[in-house]
Image: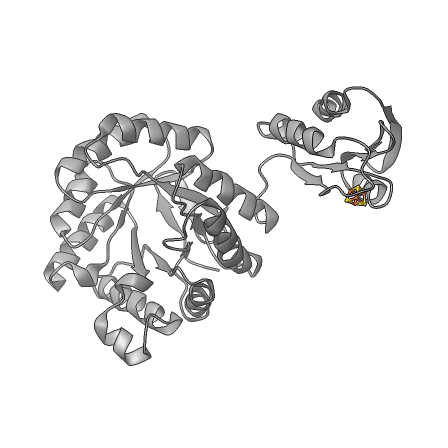
Length: 344
Ligand code: SF4
């Protein structure tokens, strides 16, 4: 079990539910754009929000975002410890900073003490692309061992200041390296782990890589908070994270849909039924499995295993509820199935 830290009103580690993070990507001085993104992220289920603070002007944006959302806000700082102190004064609930990169032990201590005084945790976040030269030489590249050693170097600086509310991330764009680095951390320390693939790419690349990397770790009980990074719409990051957590059976976010890919046996419009059902169940708060199956080969089996489902026949479908055949559906099959789901 990892240690637990408190990021605003969200607990991270120590058995708390694995939380979902995302990051604002509007320009640091675009208050309106950042607020729009922050509200959209909160509305779609983001639980922790990160914002870059690369210069003093960005602290004003941080303040505006902090006032507009209920979820905790993390200030992402590189190199300049004064920005960390300003972000804390602006109400940041967590600071992402690497204390070995801010110039001196004195500055690291100043940040650690200011965080400690406010009960604000720090995330040490190392990336394959910014691993120290000596570690790249020692390990022959940004290997998992290099990432882990780099992270622990920053963590030890905080420990030397008596600071232990630390979260660690060791992101790589290479899935096996990322997985191995987190496994090393899991075996060798008890700090909560923030999982993510860095520079994961556009939607499909990122979702596949994140599902593999984050998903495999989660299934082994590793990971306390996640961010799926996507070059694209920020809300897709949250939707993808939810699907990964749900598929790994770590958390549930409403109904899960099972639908067949269709084949030559299909005699009902599985695609459009599945699309309509998918859309209808998204906002529902029921922990149920819904099956939309095209025929009587695998259909009845899956539909029976589900809480509710259909198996297609010739221009009709058999409705199953909790393993029992209920009746045949004809006409608008999707609408009738959705009505039955609503009744559950
Ligand atoms: Fe084909 Fe039936 Fe399987 Fe769907 S459930 S893919 S229709 S065999």
